[in-house]
Image 1 (cartoon, one colour):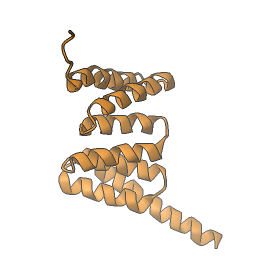
Image 2 (cartoon, rainbow, N blue to C red):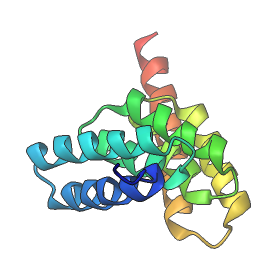
Image 3 (tube, helix red, strand yellow):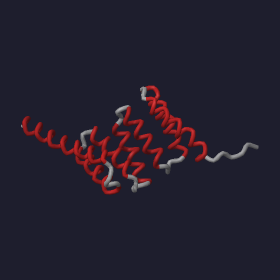
Length: 140
């Protein structure tokens, strides 16, 4: 009779290989990353870092709506981590959902007021909102 394998132990190789594949940066390796991280998420659906990293891989392939869903999963599992809000804010930014982006950057800064990247991202969002309003004004 085979020993029962703990799913959380099996999840680790998928998680680490998925992150490594994303770092390779090719479209093919990022697709492989999504496959590995999806398997890790299936094995341990309450693991916030796996949700976040899957979101990062989806983001790399410009699947921003899917990335938002994964970053939201990470936030729901562990709402104390600033980077999950920052990452979701970036995905909203790419979707041109600037108010949601701004809200997430502000949430991230409440959790980590020293994060310069989030201030930069929030500043870019303010700039995009201003430019967007100017473009609407010029068209109308």
